[in-house]
Length: 139
Length: 139
Length: 139
Image 1 (tube, helix red, strand yellow):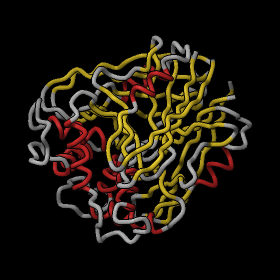
Image 2: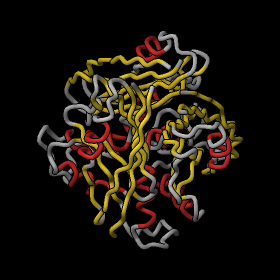
Image 3: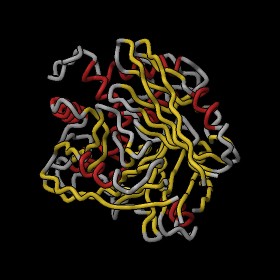
Image 4: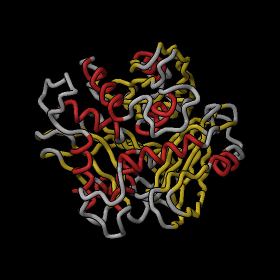
């Protein structure tokens, strides 16, 4: 059994959903693992991970619109506004989505479904450098 | 250390919460693993995974009612309506729930709590064939 | 490759967000694992796990306020009220957050980000004893 770790660094340019599928697959599919488990972990509390449709980019537009309505910036409910009106909404959006994801590796490939992509969901309005850790175990 | 993989195929007959606990446990508890980790992964973006109460089926009725209200079909917010009024709501519901789940195996058993079941949460109205991958590592 | 398991027991005194980071790190960082994977798993359906900001406790106050508004107690939508007006809301809040979390171990440390803490999110109003399983694999 072997393990490998690596990180994906994303220079996020504001609130948007960034497709990191190419970086994830390029690394994970080249570690010589036939059967195993890939875990992705984002080291932040105002950006998160999401697996969703990779085909029609309108899905990402609508996803963003939904979260903007469900957890609006500047909500008077919130007292934690240290970093601005998008500060606490970013933490809530993170809580409602994923900080870690695990995907089996089968027959030498990360077993994403046909229409699945891996996304970094940036919830802050300003530019941020984000780190996603990748861990593979298998053989 | 050993690994095993298998899949559960669910022929979903429309939007509903399907209990897959029996299929998961029947396979995972019979791989001869005393200590390890089970990961479940659904290869879709309009159906998801959920661990929740397995005792009173009213919980599933209410869960469905809540998501129907929170993410209603035919919401005019959405532009991605290619596959109908339940298309984008299915992607949002997937984002709000789980695509992967990991459960420790302890003393030869998947360590579900007493009242926990594993469910496939189908978000599309039409019949769909869904695949859930299972990966076990341990010894 | 080695594995270890342990549990954190939390005597929750009602609906609140409990920081379990110290218990998790104290155990996981002392298993002599240089590279590996930590998985946390909560064996309940009315309490969940969350990774979020560990610095300003106002974040936890606001998080609770948001979930109280999104999934209010005593909602007439729900028919499952066996254990009171907070019963079904607790199951919904669990579905919207996490039952399992996986975090890589790198250079001998659980790779939490600088501002990340691990929290038990108790959704029931009454006192409950909660169990979080920890599983480490690595070497």
